[in-house]
Length: 519
Image 1 (tube, one colour):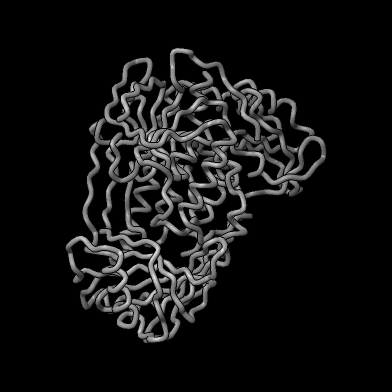
Image 2: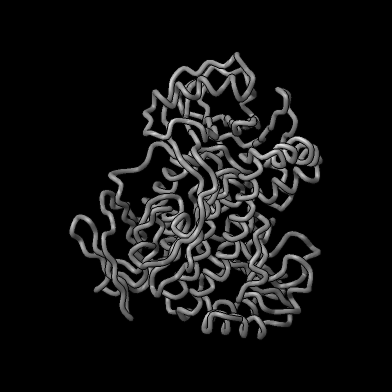
């Protein structure tokens, strides 16, 4: 994908300042650059992280990387046939397979370190001409009618049109803009460690052991050039030592917990690569937008890590915001369009918080009721294939829809055939105008796609490009049953659908959506 640069105000350091070089910030920066928007990325850390808490990227996040051209060789270096096996009385009781989502994706979930994902995103951002400014914390910010001024810890001042706070749960951007972040603590202490271990357990997936004292999890990880003996361990340890613990103390604690929680004595933990102690909180920002400043990812929402929803939710935030900012920067939309970022993404975060909170309470709850629910209800029900498929689909986030959002208000289209406006469009097989074959998602990222029967291109394409510029690619779906015209957003959601004679309706929808922020 090539970058087409827009005109740039010489008085600015960048159109968009991205604060935070984690997955959300890097994904946002890549998406903006693909759309020709100038970006500066700053981070207060001295350099990239080599370790991380997150180690699973569900299918939606993998699709985002694919659309950004940042997937690299991660599928070859990661585990893709993902399973989570839960044990009861020492025997496997539930196995959930995350590849069984049934929602038209060519990209299954990956067991992969967040550090590796960030590395691929930095590689892609470098290809797009942007380096991360490490050791550059944001210490102050102000905004006016024309832009945002950020002051960095090294004394630099950055002037930009827009600023995105992608700086995590303890976001400086959120604090400086005084956005509320209400919530509650859900759990006491969790221990986390990456260890090398001799462990005769299947490395094709993760494993979990419910226990009266708290659950224990083990997930396989990979290291390039090393034997496959690396595991991510996580244990709920509310009765553990509350004082600061070093790596050796956490390692010894895990050596004690393994036989206690799993009932196995054939596991030898050799050494540790990284350890952490954390507590689970549930918090949601009061607003995602404060004038010209936006919150993205963990800066806007934090929740339980159980289920691996944090990274995929943040990357979805980034992709949603990016195409809207790009249209505004290029002068093709008013900034009212940017209000739809919160309108579309905050309800999703609310739903993710609700589900992960419920899952966490079921896992760590120690009341007689919770123990009864785990053993007599949760485990029997979770063995049903339909329930396992549903769990896999929910984790994937491929089901995410903006059908009730402000850009999909057409009642007639809402009641029509799926996908409906706001729904994610599967990765369909398509044909380009020159007759070559492609995938729909391979054509997105910085572009919109117009899916039409070949004889209908001219009128609809002219309307789309009148409003969106040349950044619209016409494609013919290879499914002969698809006869409607679809306009697909850069984030793979359906923007509009209509008949082959309804090009004027497409033009009206685009005019309303881009210039008033509602359609």
